[in-house]
Length: 393
Image (tube, rainbow, N blue to C red):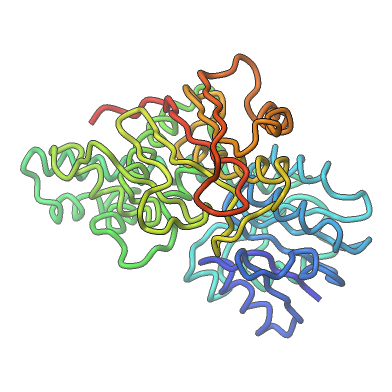
């Protein structure tokens, strides 16, 4: 039996491929209310296709009680080699681990024509991985993850470069169609055609491209760093859920001085939705204002009722996702304000906070309030964050 954890754009067609190939598959996604440990119970293979390193670690941590000795976890998200080795330390020695991120988008996932970049011992999963497409064995554990980031550190900046080329051409009166025709005869021809207009559906989300470049960042990667800054701008402009091809319109607007907003609301798919009366965060230039975060799940129910430690842990996980989306870390927090319903819980809250905010602390205010907006909440935390500077338009 195979447990497939993650039913997003890629996870759904990939799980369907397994079912059509005759495998018994149990699927799991966030927000269903089904414990992930229950979903993996009895599975010989556990496949993860999730958004980022934090999500993979969180889900596999929750799955630990259900993992059977001798099972193999196949991590197919794009999380980087360091995170893969962190998972190896997390999982019991009796559970195998393979890293197998893929090249390709939703169409190839449905057709079974992905390229699977696999690292580690594939003896328990080689046949299953072949259902998704061509399997390229990259080397030992972590090699698949490293190969994926190496490829994306070339492909994503190249697409940003072509987007900037179109913007330059338009600013100087060059017809985009004529430019595409000239580029068609060069190695950039396929990218130029793809980026002429935004794709009608999201194949490779712009936010995922930005995340991939964040993971691939290394000292001396000048072109990748510049592309990462462009993508951060686009995400801040609300384009994170759009296809990467939307970067062309974003760069055009920035270059020609149109369509820019001073304050950009941000609402991540990985953070439970608001009630429509506020946004989780707003970016204004290089400053991020984060609304009060509280321990509420996707349905608005309190997480960790009665436990300050559980609620604080959940809140800081939410904050970490918001920060990561903007290329920031807890070290970039300039000001943090905490509302407690009982100041006697301050020590327990502080213990959790110090796990995430280390070193010299930011400016801070902690106050006691009589109650918060949902009964059962014990704390709420809001922030002001100094973001990494974006490229000038």
